[in-house]
Image 1: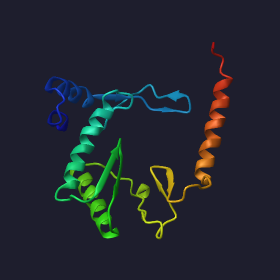
Image 2: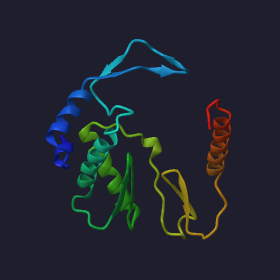
Image 3: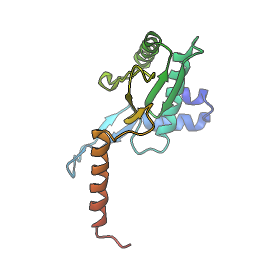
Image 4: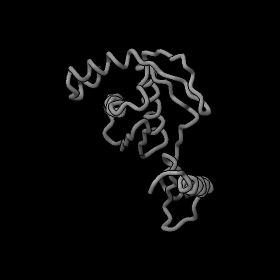
Length: 168
């Protein structure tokens, strides 16, 4: 278990392995809950405070695999998002292929539709989106339509929360 390799105590790792291999989940949809649970022995349980720790250990193992022999690429991992910067498109594709290979080896399913590649030089790209955030080499820019939409959604949520019948 990779958690033990990264310093998680053997006892805690064993307890998590035991409980996570015997998960019981209830399917919820549109304010309805199926009374019959679904049993699973794979995946990290949502809502478990130690799931992000396990995910961090797993992705650190993946990063170690991807970085083998690579001393020039700048890597960043946050939760299940992975980013890297290289000097050439060819190097970037090699890194992408290494992540795909590692994911296949450990049994993870990648969402290829979410893969984004962008050039970092201003002459090649005026703006790129990384992890849902627009970045640019210009000092000032207009918000993207996606950012404006997210802002509208957030304001709408705030207004709806404001009318909840709770004491203040």
